[in-house]
Image 1 (cartoon, rainbow, N blue to C red):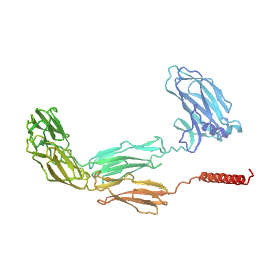
Image 2: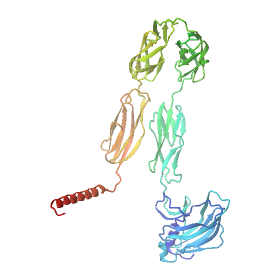
Image 3: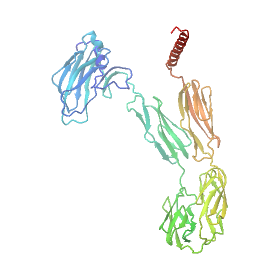
Image 4: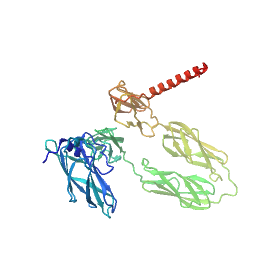
Length: 538
């Protein structure tokens, strides 16, 4: 082959040989030579659509034989030589189309700009984008040795190609397992052609779930986060693993009454007993066969009009039912006054977050107005609505039922117990911080309704990293330290490994200095102006 000059091989290999408006890829690293070709936008029926082959970078080359292929909707009709270099091409415009480029003069070694222009006619049936691509390339260096280029994202390159990791995701963001079960998590690296796809795995609570190579195994009850971290860029993604205790299924339901008789305007209460007593889901839905006669709200039955209706209690799990037939009589012409009121319990003990229903009895049972108002002596401890008591926080409160007729009262003391802490985890198991910078750790105390969620923070090496009472970690010096959070209730702990590296150098900013100098000059000029004016010189 004819010797073509050292400069032009790098030139075509540096050919950002592109269609109009196509630039070098953002991920290019240490690329000695590059050619790129893009697509043609759909222009059905268009003639002489110009595609420039340009040299954006020219560090010198010897020669190259290029074959360019193109979409079947494109017809090559001509080529215009821009005169930048010695380019040989034929008039047989079939695909693939051959072009030969060589360096003839020293000036070619640094020449940049348009090499030649390809002219295409577009089919009238064309749609979308139409590819113009490198079909084959042979390149030669200054010693006439053939060198093999690589293809990357539609471009031809020679030199090292390093595609950095931009992010990572997991194919699952949450998994629910039983103890002993396993699940496989798969990391998805972006971009897909990233050079280094190595990752590491960790579990925020190995007593709940362990992970190895993305394989997650449930080992205990609770919740943990499985975190994947890329070796390149330390990008992370997480999957929440929940290992729930086995639930106790509902087997049936009964009511404390199978029938009742009310008068218009009066009310009574039904209590639903879900079996077994330790059933996990004890939710009950209530309904009336005729809400014009009787309405029901969480077991509280109110007579609206004469007639008969059936109250149905249905378990949310399993759809088990129990019924009570309610007969409503006309209200007596002569009101029967309330003489007293009682509750079915004088004391109840509840855990925070739990509920229990108090059943009221009006004396006499045929009293005309059986309406009752409910109140709590301390809503911060326990609240009450229609007899349903909800435990809020540890302590004791008195629930009072007061009749609307006669203001008769009955009370029940509610003792609320604290909910103990069962564990704690952190939002991160490890972090890397530059000296002088800060990052916050967030502690998740379990369960969510734990009564005392107070925690303390500590650092294994405060000369490297410190932590305040809010979990804010500040990097002090290069090294490593372990940040530990501990619950006041139960003494449960979780830890985060902190690596502190040297801060990146930053350029100084003299903006404020320059501004100060300008202000000082203005002040001096103003003072000088005032003195000259007083002296009569101006």
